[in-house]
Image (cartoon, rainbow over all chains, first blue to last red; front, side):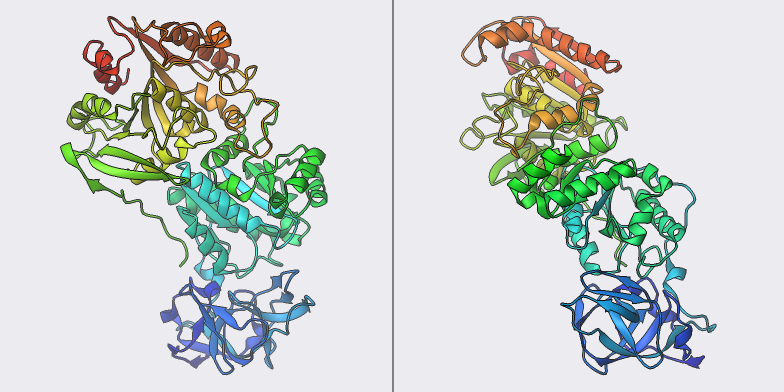
Length: 354
Length: 275
């Protein structure tokens, strides 16, 4: 370990925000030994797809060649962007996400530029020489599931409307008087989502980075589930009376599929909302969820922008389509929550709103 | 750190008689209100804020005068909105207009976020009160309905707003208060409900909705309709294996007049004593 004093010029990524900077005391040059969560000091070699970094302070910062950055090592799964692994090549690594994720790109979407390249300088350590890692600064682990109702938002893919739905439902429930915890259970650390949750009025906001993970891609299912339990417990401790949790990517993505196939996770859900883009996707999603014993409380997402597609989806699935405006309506949101809590005795009622 | 807690701070303006003034907005419609915030905590820890809704005479001041002195003594918050006729011509109903959104906004501004309130309504205000409670039962502690002209019955066999059925001509994707009320019917029927009506509230005047169907289903007068509603509520609750907590009080020597119900029948004091 080499003694190291962090510079105020370093751009510290959002995904590393829980690690106190004053703990940094040394630099371990063995970057090839990095694992997911290890804090990497690097220098920007070339600016590619990600021209900006999301800072821990909550604002984006433009990147320039030569910038010193601090980001954790991590894997990434984003079908619209990159797939990457939590591996650091001493000769240069890839910036896989703006929120802070360094690794090795495996695939990129046709529309993506090459990743921003970073020369790793070393792994940051504390005064004892221990590599600083996000996992050591996570919310406390809990054994028992939280008692608050949980509505999970899933969808067909990235950009199907899950975050919009999560934000809208959070806002609607908040207006109805609930203390809402808006959570992101899986995905890639990014302040965009959690800032949107906070703006919607959530009483508590948190994501898997608060549970110590840079991303949840390739993390063991037990760790992902433990992170979700920790988030829910923290939300409950902070007075949340209901939780809305977004699960990233589509229902076929590895960790999402594993969660939805997990009996404990499903048993802990009060209900789910499914976001998708068209009627065929709605029918497919409802069928896949039904195989896991779930029926969505409602369909939403890009689909809901089209009255005709919504009508097709409702006819094929029997599940009501709710627009963003509908989810933001406190009466609709309260109705969905009641439905989620199993308080409905009548046959499924349409929960449609403009 | 991203995690944080939102802080609710009442948004207040000072007014006369110790009242503070609030202004809610719902889709551009203004709803002014008077708020009494106690200088000290309630005498009993469970004292709920009281929200009082006027009838079609829109005499919010009468409600304020009836409730405010004792509420102040008891350390209870009191919120009395006034639905102006030009802005809220049919404030009793939730549908095309959304008085419920304005009320929720007022609750939040008053610092009631997350709390249940005792919700009182007189006449048209009682119509709004029970329709609000059907959509937001989690916001209501005790529901006080005083002499509404008619009710939305907890009966899916009747089309909204007389019952909770959705009409065949309802346009898709419009706000469906009936469907949403059905979703929360169990919680609504679990509420503590207190019905109040004057013994002499038997006049079929212009302010009483009168149709043949309504007369048959709910009765010909407010007095009769109160009894019918109590029966319907009890029946619906028991059909869901809920023990109903509903009571009907007939106020002697009172007609359809809030001030009379208060001064002669002691309505204000009874409501503040929680029925």
